[in-house]
Length: 69
Image (cartoon, rainbow, N blue to C red; front, side, top):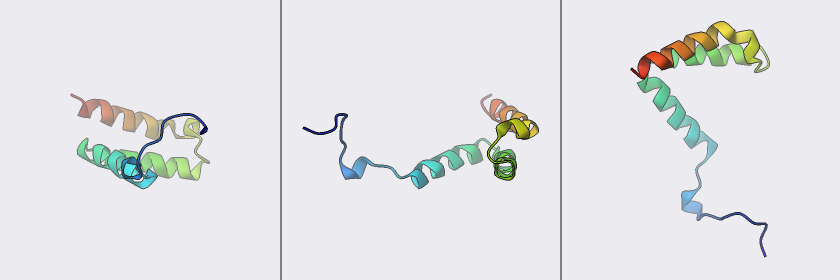
């Protein structure tokens, strides 16, 4: 008996890189690349502590909301 859960064929597995590519495509299509990368840079400089990047979080959130219509 296996460890439980369902298994999928190898052709259905997605890599983290593929998932990130999809996320980046959506962000680019929304016109929010600049604010996203500014947020990522801030998080990188601050040990991924989003509390220290509130200006960037708010800018990205605003861009995302505007893109939804």
